[in-house]
Length: 408
Image (cartoon, rainbow, N blue to C red):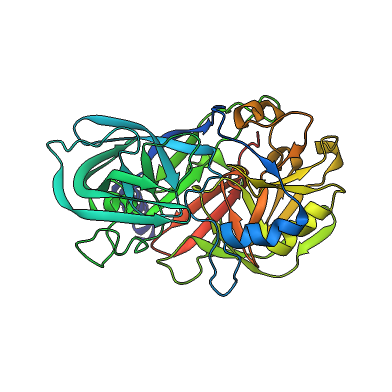
């Protein structure tokens, strides 16, 4: 009898295991490229002096800590941008749509006009204000495809006016991947927020959870040319893009504002720049590695002759004397949750192979991607994100981080 029970129990276990297999989450992906601006003569730069810093940054970077703003979405610094292809409208393909985790609406038509197609339905006027410009036009619901991901009914904006961006390399639109609820009032027919592309993928059953991972590819440190391609993974993560486990950090409230979280500390070599917890924003629509203002000044002053670009598309970036090389500079060490991330000089110095495309002169200075993120806060843009795989969870209000599988 005891033997019979054992056999029946084993059979039941086997049957249950076969009937309830472990399922993988539904995931769809989209590859993207990082485009370097060509030299069109508009990248005129002016080296600044320390006496002019406060005036420059007060205007451009909104350093008032009571307001709490930093560089947002598109600025004149966006000379290198992660761009993805979006299909919508009347069979149209928009190849250069900026991936922006700092905003939460899709708009198209920056270069060629959006034409409504058989899946398009007129909705209302729309408008979005960014830190350095704005866009307005007419909103529609439409079928939108990004890589392997398709939403049958997505609200998008069709641009008929853009202003203030000062972009060096034109874009066809913006793919907003900001938090749920962060686009309230941008469709003028209502003060309410509208579902993001990620939320609609869940609603239509394409993915299970409102989660997405982003890998941003970098530039070759010698040639300045793009290496590989970036990737957005909707519904989960791409294990091949990072090492170890995802370390989750709580998103700071309000949840319907930005992907913000706390950074524990920051060092520059052996120098402690930020000993205490400070808020940070992860934003793919911003180019530089933005440090709290006091840390920014300390890094600039760590090298005799350190300066700042005072104007032009690269305005606000730190420069060092031309004879300073990677060997002369230390790495940044950032404590983020349980993980410690190292950002070596090869990642925060602009590759000399990219100087020509940015209208920089070899031998004039050593240029960096480092800028100010505001008083007491970080603005972690594309150049920082190239070293870190990031995951955004709308449901559990958290941001995940892991070291990328390989650093270019």
